[in-house]
Image 1 (cartoon, helix red, strand yellow):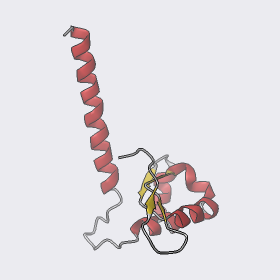
Image 2 (image 1 turned 135 degrees about the horizontal axis):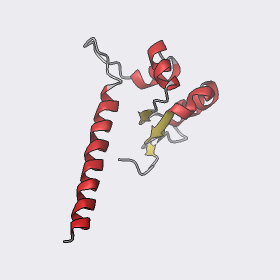
Image 3 (image 1 turned 90 degrees about the vertical axis):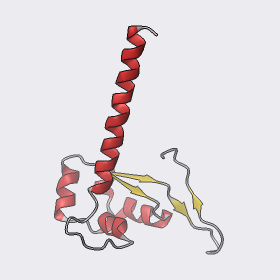
Amino acid sequence: MSEKTVWNEQLRLRFAVIALLLCGVSSTMALPSDGSDIDDDWQEQRLLQPSASQLRQESRGQVFIYDGLEYGQVQQVMSAQFDRIQNMMFTRIQHLPPTGSGPVEVEDDGCE
C-alpha cells in the first residue's frame, strides 16, 4: 500500500468518526436536561410548538432530523411552519394505509 493510500484511509476513518460523534450529539440535544420523562410525541411538540431556545438554534442554522413521523404531520408542518422548513429534515416518513388498517408503509429515504 502506498503512503498516499494509507493517508486517504486514515482521513476517511477520521471523517467517519466525526460523523458518528455528530450524530450522537444531535440525537441527545433533543433530550430534556432535567431528567424528566420523555413524552412519546416529543418530536411533534418540537415540530409544532418549538421553544424559544429551539427557535434560536434554528436561527443560527441548526437542522433537526425528525424520524418516523406520519405523512399527515409532515404535510401539516410544510403548510403551517413553512418559514422553518429549511431547518428540518424528515426520515422514514410513515404512510398510513388508506383504509386505516393494515401495515404502515415506511418511506425508504436511504438514510440509516
